[in-house]
Image (cartoon, rainbow, N blue to C red; front, side, top):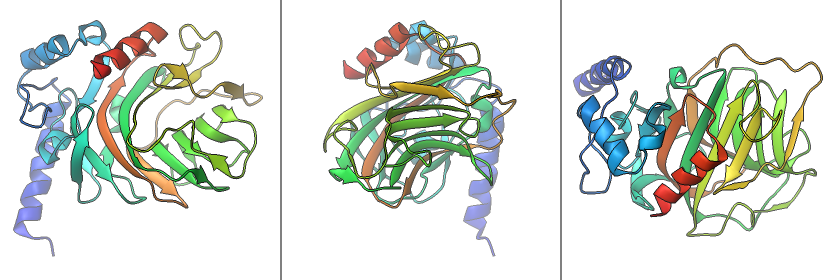
Length: 285
Protein backbone atom coordinates (compact mmCIF):
# COMPACT_ATOMS: atom_id res chain seq x y z
CA UNK A 1 0.00 0.00 0.00
CA UNK A 2 1.11 3.56 -0.61
CA UNK A 3 2.29 5.47 2.43
CA UNK A 4 0.54 8.72 3.39
CA UNK A 5 3.69 10.68 2.52
CA UNK A 6 3.80 9.17 -0.97
CA UNK A 7 0.13 9.99 -1.57
CA UNK A 8 0.69 13.57 -0.42
CA UNK A 9 3.78 13.83 -2.69
CA UNK A 10 1.77 12.55 -5.68
CA UNK A 11 -1.02 15.07 -5.05
CA UNK A 12 1.57 17.85 -4.78
CA UNK A 13 3.17 16.88 -8.11
CA UNK A 14 -0.22 16.89 -9.84
CA UNK A 15 -0.99 20.33 -8.42
CA UNK A 16 2.38 21.65 -9.55
CA UNK A 17 1.82 20.30 -13.05
CA UNK A 18 -1.59 21.98 -13.39
CA UNK A 19 -0.14 25.29 -12.26
CA UNK A 20 2.83 24.98 -14.62
CA UNK A 21 0.82 24.64 -17.79
CA UNK A 22 -1.03 27.88 -17.07
CA UNK A 23 1.88 30.15 -16.19
CA UNK A 24 5.60 30.60 -16.72
CA UNK A 25 7.38 30.51 -13.39
CA UNK A 26 10.65 31.17 -11.58
CA UNK A 27 13.56 32.79 -10.04
CA UNK A 28 15.88 34.18 -7.51
CA UNK A 29 19.17 32.34 -7.44
CA UNK A 30 19.44 29.63 -4.79
CA UNK A 31 22.59 28.71 -2.91
CA UNK A 32 23.62 26.12 -5.49
CA UNK A 33 23.25 28.43 -8.48
CA UNK A 34 19.80 27.30 -9.58
CA UNK A 35 16.48 29.12 -9.37
CA UNK A 36 13.39 28.73 -7.24
CA UNK A 37 9.92 29.20 -8.73
CA UNK A 38 7.93 32.33 -8.13
CA UNK A 39 6.08 34.42 -10.76
CA UNK A 40 6.01 35.21 -14.46
CA UNK A 41 7.70 38.54 -13.75
CA UNK A 42 10.59 36.81 -12.02
CA UNK A 43 10.82 34.30 -14.86
CA UNK A 44 11.27 37.21 -17.25
CA UNK A 45 13.87 38.66 -14.90
CA UNK A 46 15.69 35.30 -14.97
CA UNK A 47 15.83 35.44 -18.75
CA UNK A 48 17.15 39.00 -18.64
CA UNK A 49 19.80 38.51 -15.95
CA UNK A 50 21.06 35.30 -17.57
CA UNK A 51 21.35 36.96 -20.99
CA UNK A 52 18.51 34.93 -22.50
CA UNK A 53 16.07 37.73 -23.34
CA UNK A 54 16.59 37.07 -27.06
CA UNK A 55 14.75 33.72 -26.72
CA UNK A 56 12.03 35.01 -24.40
CA UNK A 57 9.22 34.23 -26.86
CA UNK A 58 10.47 30.77 -27.86
CA UNK A 59 11.40 29.09 -24.58
CA UNK A 60 8.73 26.75 -23.17
CA UNK A 61 10.81 24.79 -20.66
CA UNK A 62 13.83 25.74 -18.60
CA UNK A 63 14.90 23.43 -15.78
CA UNK A 64 18.23 23.86 -13.99
CA UNK A 65 18.26 20.23 -12.73
CA UNK A 66 20.18 21.25 -9.59
CA UNK A 67 18.06 19.80 -6.76
CA UNK A 68 14.80 17.97 -6.11
CA UNK A 69 13.07 21.34 -5.78
CA UNK A 70 14.49 22.60 -9.07
CA UNK A 71 13.57 19.41 -10.93
CA UNK A 72 9.98 19.57 -9.70
CA UNK A 73 9.69 23.36 -10.13
CA UNK A 74 11.04 24.47 -13.50
CA UNK A 75 12.24 28.03 -13.97
CA UNK A 76 9.85 28.17 -16.93
CA UNK A 77 7.26 25.59 -17.91
CA UNK A 78 5.94 22.41 -16.30
CA UNK A 79 7.77 20.39 -13.65
CA UNK A 80 9.84 17.33 -14.49
CA UNK A 81 9.03 14.00 -12.86
CA UNK A 82 11.89 12.07 -11.17
CA UNK A 83 12.08 8.46 -12.39
CA UNK A 84 14.52 7.28 -9.71
CA UNK A 85 16.15 8.60 -6.55
CA UNK A 86 18.16 11.55 -7.80
CA UNK A 87 21.64 12.59 -6.71
CA UNK A 88 23.32 15.89 -7.54
CA UNK A 89 26.89 17.05 -8.05
CA UNK A 90 28.79 20.15 -9.11
CA UNK A 91 28.28 21.13 -12.75
CA UNK A 92 29.15 24.02 -15.04
CA UNK A 93 26.15 26.14 -14.05
CA UNK A 94 25.86 25.18 -10.38
CA UNK A 95 24.56 21.67 -9.67
CA UNK A 96 23.18 18.96 -11.93
CA UNK A 97 21.72 15.46 -11.87
CA UNK A 98 24.43 12.82 -11.43
CA UNK A 99 23.64 9.70 -13.48
CA UNK A 100 25.61 6.57 -12.56
CA UNK A 101 23.29 3.94 -14.04
CA UNK A 102 21.62 3.15 -17.35
CA UNK A 103 18.08 4.17 -16.38
CA UNK A 104 16.23 7.42 -17.22
CA UNK A 105 16.54 10.12 -14.57
CA UNK A 106 13.53 12.35 -15.30
CA UNK A 107 10.40 12.47 -17.43
CA UNK A 108 9.62 15.52 -19.58
CA UNK A 109 5.96 16.32 -20.42
CA UNK A 110 5.26 15.84 -24.12
CA UNK A 111 3.29 19.09 -24.42
CA UNK A 112 6.54 21.11 -24.41
CA UNK A 113 7.59 19.42 -27.67
CA UNK A 114 6.25 21.25 -30.72
CA UNK A 115 5.60 18.79 -33.55
CA UNK A 116 6.22 21.28 -36.36
CA UNK A 117 9.53 22.63 -35.10
CA UNK A 118 11.58 22.89 -31.95
CA UNK A 119 14.95 22.93 -30.22
CA UNK A 120 16.39 21.07 -27.24
CA UNK A 121 19.59 22.26 -25.54
CA UNK A 122 21.41 20.62 -22.66
CA UNK A 123 24.71 20.91 -20.81
CA UNK A 124 26.35 17.60 -19.87
CA UNK A 125 29.49 17.04 -17.78
CA UNK A 126 31.30 13.83 -18.74
CA UNK A 127 32.39 12.16 -15.49
CA UNK A 128 33.41 8.61 -16.40
CA UNK A 129 33.33 7.75 -20.10
CA UNK A 130 35.05 4.70 -21.65
CA UNK A 131 37.51 5.32 -24.45
CA UNK A 132 35.32 3.34 -26.87
CA UNK A 133 31.84 1.91 -27.26
CA UNK A 134 31.36 -1.55 -28.71
CA UNK A 135 28.88 -2.55 -31.39
CA UNK A 136 25.32 -1.85 -30.22
CA UNK A 137 26.27 0.16 -27.13
CA UNK A 138 24.70 3.60 -26.91
CA UNK A 139 24.07 6.58 -24.66
CA UNK A 140 20.70 8.21 -25.28
CA UNK A 141 20.64 11.76 -24.00
CA UNK A 142 16.94 12.15 -24.76
CA UNK A 143 14.30 9.74 -25.98
CA UNK A 144 10.61 9.96 -26.88
CA UNK A 145 9.43 6.42 -27.44
CA UNK A 146 6.28 4.42 -28.06
CA UNK A 147 5.98 0.75 -27.19
CA UNK A 148 7.35 -0.15 -30.63
CA UNK A 149 9.93 2.43 -31.67
CA UNK A 150 11.62 5.70 -30.92
CA UNK A 151 9.76 8.71 -32.28
CA UNK A 152 12.68 10.97 -31.29
CA UNK A 153 16.13 9.80 -30.22
CA UNK A 154 19.32 11.76 -29.56
CA UNK A 155 22.39 9.67 -28.81
CA UNK A 156 26.06 8.76 -29.07
CA UNK A 157 26.34 5.18 -30.28
CA UNK A 158 28.45 2.40 -31.78
CA UNK A 159 25.47 1.35 -33.92
CA UNK A 160 22.18 3.19 -34.15
CA UNK A 161 20.46 0.08 -35.49
CA UNK A 162 20.89 1.34 -39.05
CA UNK A 163 24.66 0.86 -39.35
CA UNK A 164 25.68 4.36 -38.22
CA UNK A 165 27.82 5.37 -35.25
CA UNK A 166 29.07 8.39 -33.30
CA UNK A 167 26.63 11.24 -32.85
CA UNK A 168 23.22 10.13 -34.12
CA UNK A 169 19.57 11.10 -33.94
CA UNK A 170 16.29 9.85 -35.37
CA UNK A 171 12.92 11.45 -35.89
CA UNK A 172 9.57 9.83 -36.68
CA UNK A 173 10.64 6.17 -36.55
CA UNK A 174 13.98 6.90 -38.28
CA UNK A 175 12.40 8.46 -41.36
CA UNK A 176 14.69 11.45 -40.74
CA UNK A 177 18.16 10.66 -39.38
CA UNK A 178 21.49 12.36 -38.73
CA UNK A 179 24.78 10.66 -37.89
CA UNK A 180 28.51 11.35 -37.84
CA UNK A 181 30.06 7.97 -38.80
CA UNK A 182 28.77 5.82 -41.67
CA UNK A 183 29.99 2.51 -40.22
CA UNK A 184 29.29 0.49 -37.09
CA UNK A 185 31.32 -1.46 -34.57
CA UNK A 186 33.87 -0.35 -31.98
CA UNK A 187 33.68 3.46 -31.90
CA UNK A 188 36.01 5.90 -30.17
CA UNK A 189 34.34 8.36 -27.80
CA UNK A 190 36.90 11.04 -28.70
CA UNK A 191 34.27 13.11 -30.51
CA UNK A 192 31.92 12.77 -27.52
CA UNK A 193 34.50 14.27 -25.17
CA UNK A 194 36.88 13.49 -22.35
CA UNK A 195 36.34 12.98 -18.63
CA UNK A 196 35.71 16.24 -16.79
CA UNK A 197 34.61 18.08 -19.92
CA UNK A 198 31.37 20.08 -20.11
CA UNK A 199 29.65 19.75 -23.49
CA UNK A 200 26.71 21.69 -24.91
CA UNK A 201 24.27 19.63 -26.97
CA UNK A 202 21.60 21.09 -29.23
CA UNK A 203 19.06 19.34 -31.42
CA UNK A 204 16.77 21.21 -33.82
CA UNK A 205 13.94 20.03 -36.05
CA UNK A 206 11.67 21.79 -38.55
CA UNK A 207 9.15 20.39 -41.04
CA UNK A 208 10.25 23.00 -43.62
CA UNK A 209 13.98 22.75 -42.94
CA UNK A 210 16.08 24.06 -40.06
CA UNK A 211 17.03 27.74 -40.63
CA UNK A 212 20.42 28.00 -42.33
CA UNK A 213 20.54 24.29 -43.26
CA UNK A 214 18.57 24.16 -46.49
CA UNK A 215 16.18 21.22 -46.69
CA UNK A 216 17.69 19.42 -43.68
CA UNK A 217 14.86 18.95 -41.21
CA UNK A 218 17.01 17.72 -38.33
CA UNK A 219 20.30 19.19 -37.02
CA UNK A 220 22.42 18.02 -34.07
CA UNK A 221 25.40 19.99 -32.73
CA UNK A 222 28.01 19.56 -30.01
CA UNK A 223 29.00 22.94 -28.59
CA UNK A 224 28.49 25.07 -31.73
CA UNK A 225 29.74 22.56 -34.30
CA UNK A 226 27.45 20.32 -36.30
CA UNK A 227 27.91 16.83 -34.82
CA UNK A 228 25.55 14.90 -37.07
CA UNK A 229 27.34 15.74 -40.33
CA UNK A 230 25.31 13.29 -42.44
CA UNK A 231 21.58 13.80 -43.00
CA UNK A 232 19.18 11.40 -44.69
CA UNK A 233 15.45 11.07 -45.30
CA UNK A 234 13.82 7.78 -46.19
CA UNK A 235 11.88 7.57 -49.45
CA UNK A 236 8.36 8.85 -48.91
CA UNK A 237 9.17 10.09 -45.40
CA UNK A 238 6.15 11.51 -43.62
CA UNK A 239 6.29 14.16 -40.93
CA UNK A 240 4.67 12.99 -37.71
CA UNK A 241 1.50 14.51 -36.29
CA UNK A 242 2.30 14.19 -32.58
CA UNK A 243 4.87 13.09 -30.05
CA UNK A 244 3.10 10.08 -28.59
CA UNK A 245 4.60 9.96 -25.10
CA UNK A 246 6.50 12.02 -22.57
CA UNK A 247 10.25 12.26 -23.11
CA UNK A 248 12.98 10.88 -20.87
CA UNK A 249 16.47 12.11 -20.09
CA UNK A 250 19.26 9.48 -20.02
CA UNK A 251 19.07 5.89 -21.25
CA UNK A 252 22.06 3.59 -21.87
CA UNK A 253 22.20 0.43 -23.94
CA UNK A 254 24.86 -2.15 -23.06
CA UNK A 255 27.02 0.28 -21.11
CA UNK A 256 27.00 2.58 -18.10
CA UNK A 257 28.50 6.04 -18.38
CA UNK A 258 28.65 8.51 -15.50
CA UNK A 259 27.35 11.96 -16.44
CA UNK A 260 25.98 15.11 -14.87
CA UNK A 261 22.93 16.59 -16.62
CA UNK A 262 22.75 20.35 -16.23
CA UNK A 263 20.40 23.07 -17.49
CA UNK A 264 17.77 21.69 -19.87
CA UNK A 265 15.98 24.08 -22.23
CA UNK A 266 13.27 23.35 -24.79
CA UNK A 267 12.01 25.86 -27.39
CA UNK A 268 8.89 25.88 -29.57
CA UNK A 269 10.87 26.90 -32.65
CA UNK A 270 13.99 25.70 -34.45
CA UNK A 271 16.59 28.26 -33.43
CA UNK A 272 19.12 29.73 -35.82
CA UNK A 273 22.84 28.93 -35.67
CA UNK A 274 23.46 32.36 -34.14
CA UNK A 275 20.84 31.82 -31.42
CA UNK A 276 22.41 28.46 -30.54
CA UNK A 277 25.82 30.15 -30.45
CA UNK A 278 24.50 32.79 -28.05
CA UNK A 279 23.06 30.12 -25.76
CA UNK A 280 26.41 28.38 -25.72
CA UNK A 281 28.24 31.62 -24.91
CA UNK A 282 25.74 32.43 -22.14
CA UNK A 283 26.60 29.13 -20.49
CA UNK A 284 30.35 29.59 -20.87
CA UNK A 285 30.42 33.08 -19.33
